[in-house]
Length: 335
Image (cartoon, rainbow, N blue to C red):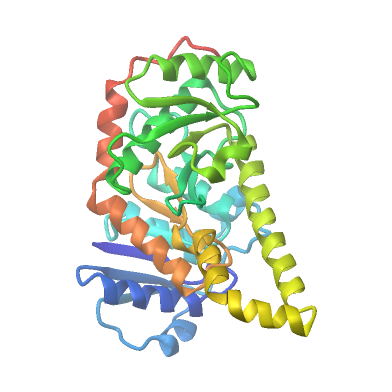
């Protein structure tokens, strides 16, 4: 497999990106990586050039750049050239930790949508208390959604969890304000009915408070709601660990207690650590495109590489296209 990597995207680029790539090359002997970015900054950090190619550019899309304008005006940027490698058939998949909006725009404009998919979804794996995690679709690719979009999100999530996570019958949940049927907006009511009539393992409405308890393997919602859920989970986790650190360092007694509890605290942190789950997949494109977390360290970026490789090796894109073709036409449904 050939993987295109935006070496300049993310808060810790290019150091953490290159270290993550080296972990990927060590783990997968059939992996070849195309690093796209400033060669003068990349090459001194490389321990080996085996199975590595560099595409040089000094142009970078910044986090505060307007996504559409940046993709159209900075066509020689590391992110755009990374996606171009996929479009031109030089790479099978792409990973970037850069500007999320720009990556979504580049994916849509350059790679294009999977046939039959109306709107792609930005879909991260999020942690659960049992360590298995769940897939949330969508977290910001589309703020407004039709029922047909959410049905397609559910189907893409179902395929991903079966092919990549090895779950035979993924539980599909619809994010709502209550678990009872008939709850929610006009949108969720229509989606509930359609999911209930589908062949997927639909477990009904799920509430945000139950997500970390593993109430479902796939949770679908519109991008506005999903983004709020994502940021709330991230913020709560960061605040909790910050509070624990403050308390455990506040006195000698607490420091001694922290020393005793260190192995348990480490296990808790690992269960809730986003870096174990990879990045957010842009599901619905014609090739795997993974958005790694902006603050990814080398381990988090390696996890994103592992995710891209699994999607490619398990032919997730082709499977999604076949499954979408089986769906009855969504035209004429609720707008």
